[in-house]
Image (cartoon, rainbow, N blue to C red):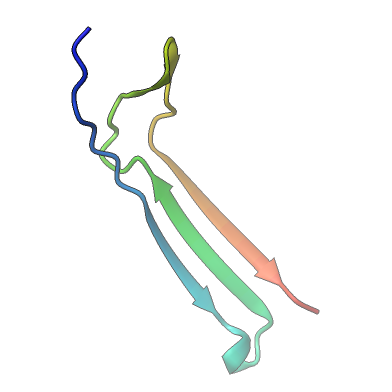
Length: 59
């Protein structure tokens, strides 16, 4: 079996709104942007592109 290099791209963007008086922080992440199909372990295909939005508040 021939092994080749893989190209996986992850990106994340965050904002903190507490400085403007709103107790909220937000993070948006995209995993596997290029939708590259690769194998993490033998017989286990890695997950496709997914997006995650995280909101956190402090009261």
